[in-house]
Length: 292
Image (cartoon, rainbow, N blue to C red; front, side, top):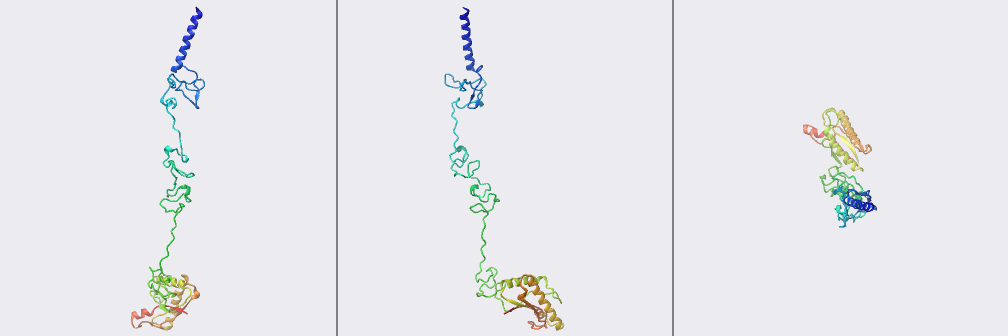
């Protein structure tokens, strides 16, 4: 009698234990599943999920949506694919056909760090400053300078050539005009009674120096002249000093001293009327004589 009662009691306890296990109130220690502990589901001793009669995972009372396991909820996990193997999943790749080996940004598109239009994988100058024009290698574009047009080939560009049809081989000045055997250096003046060249004369002499340097095969005489006022000896000495001053200036501007000689002619060889102020001004001059 006692034995039957005891067996009945054990049966009741066994069924109660199963019921508690099914409801999650009591169960054996949870096992790991795929490396994670799932407190929201009942697992068996082998680590598998315990299923109910409908084939669904049995949840514990502690289950929350954050604990949901796709296979228990009937959801298939999406497989991550990367067709172009650039490290960006296809579902996030805005450029899904990137060629192999090309560096890409977070969107899966070819990377251009300096924004010059040349992808990093082909950019030989990856740090080009913003707005700089570049060539196909991503480096600063160098545009070759175009030589100015010189129709008569005299060495003076057409835009500056005041004598655009100079005959071939002729020596020309800085304006592109043929050099005469002798000409006055218009605009070259001195402080009264001295050999000091005025500031305004320097630009004229700069052009003379440029002409002589370009025509390196000619030698010249720098000739100084005065009007007829004053003693002739003083005038000759003053004209010599003025000629020397001009020679020195041309030498300082790059003309070889050996190509020049200076000579003062004083009041000789007037080209104006010494009885008038205008004529005397014409006679106070410096000329350049080309030496054969």
